Image (cartoon, rainbow, N blue to C red; front, side, top):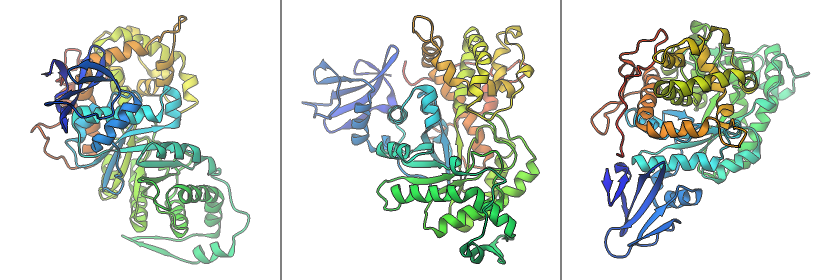
Length: 510
């Protein structure tokens, strides 16, 4: 909308004292505008360009983000893991939050909009300041006041934990994988404490679940997890025990090559609880494979049986199960929702990048083909960072597809994994003159199609939430978020996808 001579984002218009503050589009940039309502505007502390008449053009810098969070507390993260349902949506690009807001306005679930691992920061060249600031600006732009979380995801060192907490992140996910021993590891002897605590006992957890340990099983639990438990206890004592930070604590034991059995899950939870470690969520490594960007691979019946016990263990100790690499695990979402009794935390990340690339494939198939060819050339390099097993030979040759067929590649499991894990190399590739090969063109395209990207995200993440059994609430505008079926109507490829004739979604600014 046109407001005070600017192309304003309507939902961002807020008054504070004698000033009005809002976000506006200026060509390829978004800025904050501060202007007087009447008389002399009060100084708010933003740094920017004086436009005269008391108006100020404010660039989207970290310093200005901190001022924004001070004056508008809804743009700062808050704790949310104590809510029954929470859902993390990592954004590798810093542009996905408007689309995420579009869906989370329609579902009864707490969103964690700022969610990134150090690995992802290194691959994208971003910082935690960048991640949090992008979300704060987007939340202000969209007028989202329901609250959101910020997750320092898969952190492995006290230094990284301190970094995220110092910025106000409201959740820390401690990755204990460096301290988890190989599956076959065993303690050499059993101390009297372990014998007294575990042997010759039956632990009745309720809901028909009872667990007991043989000496061999107990030795293996100690051998595999004792160091990880000690590490988690150390980090908890250092950062969380005295409630110095307004942040929730999640413990991850999922980054391993072998599943966490229910017995091992119980052992880890009991040892942590007995040591006085308070944590909001715990992420086991489930049976089967939770590979990136594709559906669950494994025996669904076995998964259903085991997650029922995992859910009982979590309820017994009073925390939520956390499901990592949760993107697109549609075949097991119903059982996750059911067996956790609707109390869970699910994390997704790369699927939002894939939806961004879907927009590219739809509106500029030629650019997508360039990206696709480069991704194939660097796949082996990228695969060192992720556990994925695509068969690249199963991917249709992109140059043999019509423009109308290209978007369907984003529904092909092997192509999804190819594009999913090569994001860092794609974004950072440079030409001989030092300019970016893809990055600037991609961001320009996404900027010009921000409404369409938001619609795709809302439909895709909405499918996740719906299958998890999350209750839909009335949309503030009286409209539901778009469905995948609605967006896909008219598709004509053999792989599914979005029709190139689909109309773009609505845009807030002209």
